[in-house]
Image 1 (cartoon, helix red, strand yellow):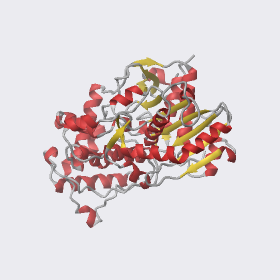
Image 2: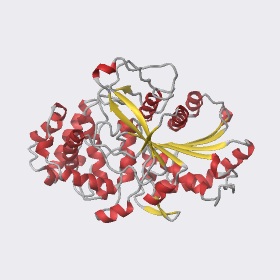
Image 3: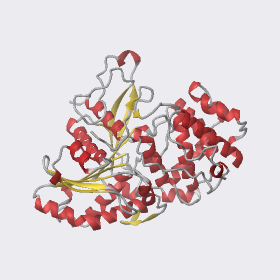
Image 4: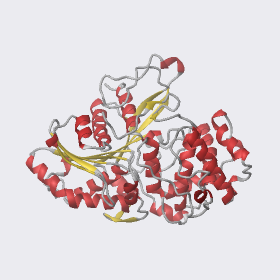
Length: 482
């Protein structure tokens, strides 16, 4: 499959797939920059504050076995998991770079691909396909991918929507799709009698898909009255994966016709200004000296010691710049893309870190899992400063029925007898080596009030956002099904 997604390999250390070395410094180096921008929506934090805070909380969460999950029951129905897997395949296809690779990877005829559109400001990238094999019309919406997407997604405000509120950027994209592609969807459904409609997306694309589904549903006041697309509500499905928070709590709990899947600690479904402010409070309540332990943390701790940080929470602008440059050098040393600032760049190295004058971070047009997740974090979390109470009022959630894919560590003696786990991409017959450290269970939420809300600092919070890691975890869960 010629995918737009950068080649990723199975990591036995973190249990996920990603490009490059898996290390805690790699994660902190990326998140310290991107999350520091998100902290503008809460109490102002510098890059150095964010880095030290993540270091502290990572160790605390690991010790406590911290988890943000939902109340529910384990899914053991093979058909349900296979359906989940099927629409994830289509969500992933939205990242394909051109028509030829899309058709090849999805094994479609040219005439079945009705639309393959690139993104623009206030317009998402998406495709529309007539899926004759299973009698569906499918619209797949791509998540954050490049700088153009960021211009749309960075809209920092909520706006009124269906007697509640929704994320302005994602809602604007959903409105554009309904206005411009609604007539096309209606025509395709009329031409293919008996076909159903599926809307699907990953990351911010999942949020747009959910909002678009809600808008289509709202055009019919009854299950027995056709929607504006000419089909009934029960013939419409929406599946989201790693979906960003996009509606308020009331709407999130109400929309049971939407399905959203989240892998373990994926940060994107949990990130918003209110969650980041809670994260900051957790960090302040955690002792730095008690948290810095173990070989995994020596890199960042050593960096702090070399530049004599002292009380990191009260760090000055000069210290913030120094920490940023040290992390940048480590990023380059490990063969990762530049953070957008180098010690040789005098204009950037003299930048003031506190407040609004953050480093001019370059948004790359590549789409590794860290890049996609980091861009989504910035897009959802960035909001003008406000009080904690005001942030809680504005807090958004992932809508619909929630599925949480839980990761469980396997005992050493059981690893070599475990079944092999699949290899990338969606090609039957490929297997990875035996001996995985983890197994997976899929939990379907039964309590609508239980929503994802707490950011867990773990080595997987970015890799859990990967389409391929979600895919492999579902395949692993299928092994336990009847």
